[in-house]
Length: 202
Image (cartoon, rainbow, N blue to C red; front, side):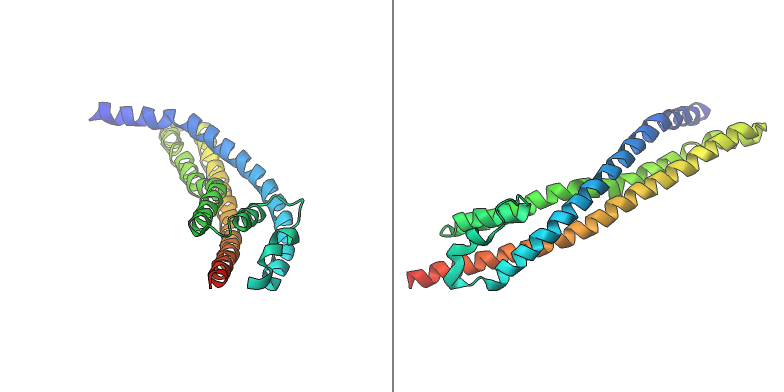
């Protein structure tokens, strides 16, 4: 039994360095995500103003002009899919496929935030528990310096892990609302196009 417990101890202790390195990489990636998030937010504000105005004015009779009303220098996901939908207005299966593809592309953009939300706290907890073993050993042997060092590592990984998870969670919540609104606008546009096609057939 002692051999088994010693093996588990050495395995868990050996995981500390990979866990800390991975946690630092995720934290660095979360900082990059913050920068890209604010860039996305700035573009989103400008896009929403133009799209909202277009959606409010669009109807069955002026659908053909939707491509001209879009901002030409905007390559956001929503604008690109509005252009694709406008180009395939007579193809209902393709329109439904484009809606599904938009959901897939939106989910790809959310993947990093989801990963940070889950892995950040997990690695933070691992980085907390792993040094606790050596810290208790140091306490038992009277090595206060070793115990203090391990406790410092434990608390630091907890904070970094939670902060990384918080960044992922906040960006995930905001982006999900953005894409839900975008999908609603695309779905409304597809319904108008389908209604226009049916009207022309009649």
